[in-house]
Image (cartoon, rainbow, N blue to C red):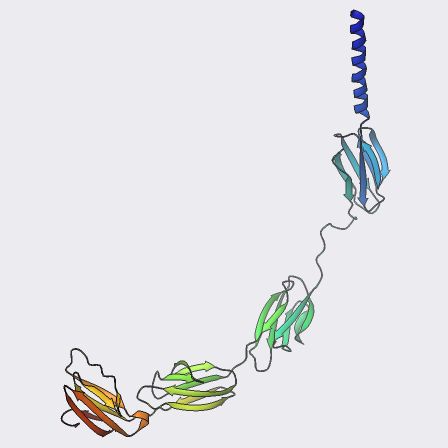
Length: 318
């Protein structure tokens, strides 16, 4: 019995030793590359004691073990890395002596200058440019981050000034037409102003318009319309002299209705008044019209002159 135990013990010991031997020989192939290629490197770690190689190279390393690699090449900065075997390949990028990994800023930046309308003249002031004149479209080389002032001009358009930081994009000027100013006034304040049939405001009134032909109309209740047509090429002033229309003023008792040439007129009495004073204007600017008034069954109808007179209603107008 003791003999059998001794034999089994020897067998178990051999198995353990074989496993340890197998583990000791297990390695991982690691690829080592560099930019540029042909870099000399020294590796220190398990099974490697300051051994020297040249990239590209494949080495068998012990998984999980730490290795230190020092890469050198004439004209380049030395680089040291620490690597855990089994964590992947090794790649290093060396930097030339006297250079930086940060890209250098360009000395100039090309900037495009455009405008609407095209062909505008512009004067630029700033680094390397001192009141130099060009025409759009144009591309110029400017110093990045430097400040420039550009003045655009074009005949018939307002000048435009743009402050620009080089490198922030193109420069575009949208020039506004240098439109003439039309000023309209009248002998009646706050008369309505119409331009080409569209209401714009009340007198006195000023507006900038593009050059061209315009129909101007000025109106006010009780006055004949002022109408004219102009050719606007430069600043221009118009005075609209409105003429009072022929009218007739009637003093009417409350509840009266009025017709002029058969057309009923709007008459609104104040609730607190027994009589009202109303002014009517001759249709189409005529000098007279047929006026009919009805009140409580009484009807008075006469042809009256619209000559700015004031009449009271009785059995007749007087």
